[in-house]
Image 1 (cartoon, protein in one colour):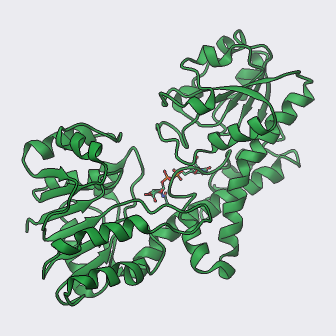
Image 2 (cartoon, rainbow, N blue to C red; image 1 turned 90 degrees about the vertical axis):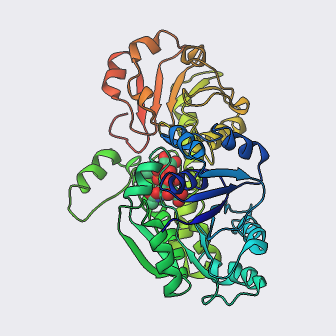
Image 3 (cartoon, rainbow, N blue to C red; image 1 turned 60 degrees about the horizontal axis):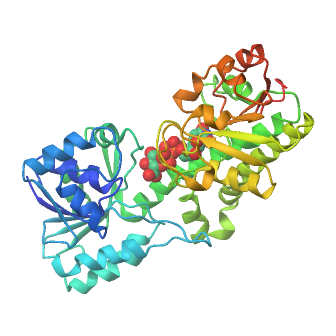
Length: 425
Ligand code: SAJ
């Protein structure tokens, strides 16, 4: 049955989700505190980038099924998709979730459903949202239904993953779970798994924590390999041929607003019981420092005076324009601390004044002694070392993402180094 929806938060998750509900026949009203975002959505313009979003937004707005404003409206279903970042002290900042919940209270009526999509520490629905929703005067679970259905999509492939991924639905009771499942069935083709709200919160946080711990393990293997004449990339690949082993890859650190954040949600609620989780976070956070140290020692070994470093890649992962929590920015801070001068280049990022960014690769290479690959963009995998060597002062290359065929670079006269690989010196 077609419903009316009010979606609070029109960002990386809320906007694509609103559009999906609208093009599947529901009447959707989107809400955001950012006036510019609201105006752009109504004008069918994008304030975020996502493959396939533009045409779907146009379809949704043109059909009259999607509108946006600064204020919530009455609806059958309220979906909350707002940020849940961490504070300086690594504790969850749930202010946005709380404010969004408060903002819908005047509009909630008997029979409505409230769904939280934001990733949150386990117990947030029960301990933070429900007390606010009780202010409606409705009996929770009988007159008002509530659930957590965490988003699980990867930037760049959101529309594919919204449809194909399995979905977790955790209601505060069975009726809440069933109502939520029935709604998502309008576009989800993956399986929908029903549970309680707190287990759904836990499952979502576990997914990103699993990845963080696994990457920390890979990074630790890289550090060990750097000491013992082993290429960790090769060793990990070989180990992964075992049918029950799946080790992730090392790198200059873990960025983005999910994997570097969510493990702290578990550390915060049980600090004494989350030792591996905290150690992994710290291991991954140390990688930019290690990377900068490796750059410095490579330059020193070659006795290069007043070196200049050309950093390639500023976004937090390959082929996207997102710099949030990017390890590259932390490597930059470390180079500044060490007094090493640098330029930077990223074909996906238009402007970042803080990082001495140049608009062309050749400009970044001018007078440089070393190229450091920090993000494995497709463009970097195809770099021609013969072209690059002509632009530089010295010929050193350090690949932290295993993006390059270093043999080709050696043939072009480069001294090469790879993170986690002391086999190819
Ligand atoms: N990274 C490594 N080694 C690896 C994999 C990644 O160093 O083997 C680094 C990347 O370079 C990047 C960071 O980790 O800096 C995070 O990248 P990612 O692709 O692992 O994750 P995100 O943050 O883009 O998206 C994750 C996804 N979660 C999982 O895969 C379990 C996505 O499905 C979630 O929706 C998203 O977090 C989220 O919003 O929670």
